[in-house]
Image (cartoon, rainbow, N blue to C red; front, top):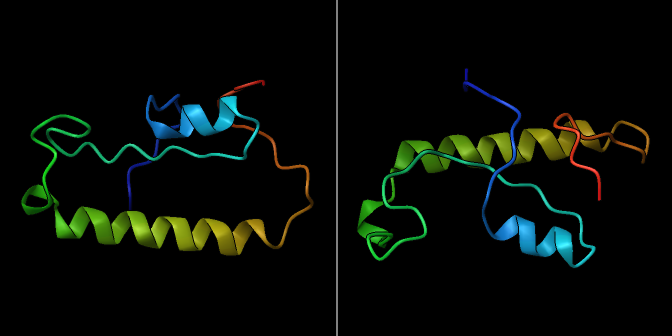
Length: 77
């Protein structure tokens, strides 16, 4: 039930990807993300729970496919 959209996510994942590590970015649309307003008291519990469920489900599904997963956004490195 999560609205998903494949698009580049400008976050920490870009640095990891540029270093040659496998990386995925998940934009959750939380206000103040990666700014001085990004404090623990502003974390949206429901959003964090949904992101965790998405990550677990994606890992579970990816474990059952070949090693050559392709990018849905065409991000070629």
